Length: 411
Image 1 (cartoon, rainbow, N blue to C red):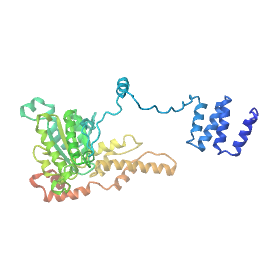
Image 2: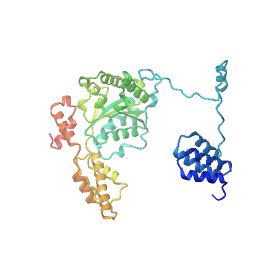
Image 3: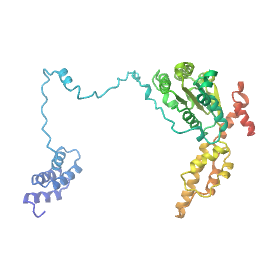
Image 4: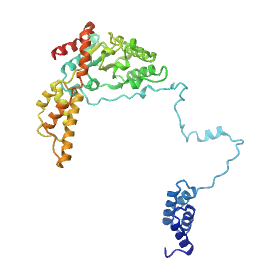
């Protein structure tokens, strides 16, 4: 610059000729800082840091140019003789809280101070059985098993009906078993604790069983509480087919916790379980007093399909959609299949809008095309269930399934 002193002009010329020379650039930045030209000094230091990001001199010069106080030179450590550590702790004890409060983890990975309340207990909010479209048979059986005794405390007392119990929901995948369990919790005004095999299993011996126990301990403290055991065939597989002793111990622990449902301490703990393959669940889990009531959750009926379609189309740009016609041609589709139909129809309209350059609404043509392309995901399940209904229906355990298969002429 014209008003630069000769030395500074020479440094600028040298820096321009050798831009990667960090010491030369820092020397220029130092002169600029001494001349109270901080902005220019910051600019030069920044360029130096681009070439040498870890350069301590460049960082220090940048800090001084930006107004930070200079760092005091490091003091040599004082000799450690005669220092009263106990007195120092007493002086700062009230001002400095402890940094770590949890107990150390043992060598086997277990933590003696495990907190059962660490399990996520959810509030189902305003979800009710009325929000479950159709499925009146399922609702009636749930009402008899759980809800009627709760709504009529005097009759419950008269007939000796407790607020405990276990119920197994089974059926093809994607038919709303988890949503029904949440709706039951909502009807009960209860907390909701969902548990899957990933939540329980652990590599350390004994930890899986303890996790299972802590689940039920949490539910007892949060009562009324619905414990939802998702994919029960994984958590409670038949022990005769389980080669690993750890899994057998988990099933044993689950049996023990379910037996605890009979005790007064577990009043208000409701156990709901769901599985796609009830024939793979250990028989001991389904004896009276445990998960002794079973409900078949089938693909949604007409009213349920209408409610599901309406839900998945509610926020999409649609026009002239005939829900009645769509409900008829989607018989046999699961709730997940119906959601996919709506998603595929929206995708068709979106791609068409991109190709033509004109945004259009989702129409009946898109939905019909999507529905025709979807293969019912429940069909493979019914193929397996048919063999069970024909040859393994001991004691009428799957009578509901037999009735449905005969009605659909699949048996």
